[in-house]
Structure formats: structure tokens, C-alpha cells
Image 1 (cartoon, rainbow, N blue to C red):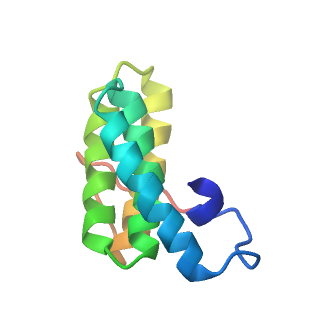
Image 2 (cartoon, rainbow, N blue to C red):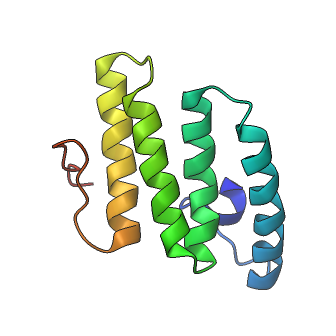
Length: 112
């Protein structure tokens, strides 16, 4: 999924319509399978498929998935330093998707 929609790849080789078609199928499968995962794995899955929904124009669902990921990470059993780093990353993504500053539990994302 990250190779189709992630921020670090060049997509010029694959037409947009094909990327959307593959992304839709993968997203649907990931959503079904992630129900069986632990909270932190679900958070990773939600972040991954949020790329697809944002790119495909369903920004509301992308924002909702990132917000779910924030809640899962915050309640997860991570060391505080790792948790804060991941929350800051998710807040940067949420800010990008919303087009405005995003906050979570009094946390504001640091600049890139």
C-alpha cells in the first residue's frame, strides 16, 4: 500500500486509475484483517490505508482513520518516548489531511 500511495515513492510508472483500483482492493482486505490485530498493529494499518483514502478523495475517512490510529497509539503499551514520537508523526499526517493544525490530547505536532 505504501508503494502505491505512501509519501516516499515515485508513482509515474503506474497509471492513477490502476493505483486507485489496487488501493481499493487492498484497503478493503486490510480493514477486514486488521480487526484480528492488536491495537498498535491496527494503528499502523489505519495509517497505511489512510494514504489511499486521502489520495482517492475520501478525505473524511482518511482523517477518521488517523484519528483512530491516534487513540490506539495513545492507549497502547509503548514506552513514552516512542509513543510521543508516533503521536507527533500521526499529528503531522492529520494536519496535512485536514489542511489546518491538528491537536490531540494537548499535543501539537512539531514542525517537520
